[in-house]
Length: 293
Image 1 (cartoon, one colour):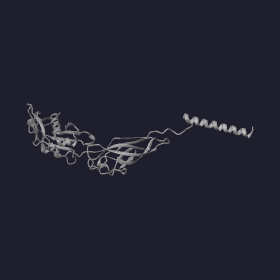
Image 2: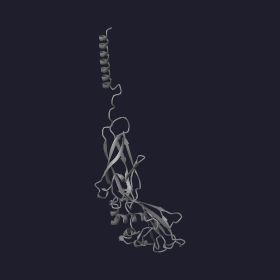
Image 3: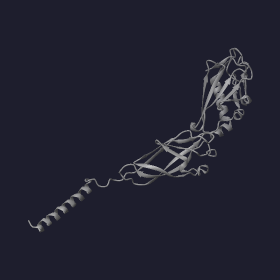
């Protein structure tokens, strides 16, 4: 075989191999460039800041699919958050939180949107379809506790056993309720007091010593207190008329005391508050009656 014939055969073989390689690429064989995938960001939840604006209470989920993300820009239409920068965000272990930022002037009791821009890089050898993406998170600050002066403005609607109703009273007089017996009972709104160690706890004590055998209905006072809260414009302003739940509990070890717990909505922005009603001005009095379900 001449050198010329050998050269022709080599040219033909190279051409065949080239066609085979093209065919493999078109059919997906031969390991050509992988198809790019879409990167995604999952940022869920609400960042909650303490009432004083100084403490970040929680963190929220932040994760990426098919990519790694680096925070490059922060923006918000909320005026008090426009000085937030990337330096104020900590991303670790799939979570995000904020730090070293004073939120005291941020509006409380609402969700404030913040847009985060991330630079994306592939998390594997597979390319991605874009190199930037944004995610909107929400930051909210809890409301301060209701003040004792607000509770001192409470007005009470009461109905006696004969169906006679008195509205907007400053007090709850035993003679104006249906619970029996109810001697020596007089709760005055101006006597509301706040706890020394817990400012979400309020106390209202009978101005008298009660009497043995007294039985005050927890259900009746739940209605009285619930209506009072609804009518208190300062409290309704406190949680933007978002509503509340009120539940009661008696104390078998101290039957003269009953507790009402108030949960404002949305609960993420508000602390629970409680009201404790004591049937006797004198805690040393032996028998002053008790609360009944």
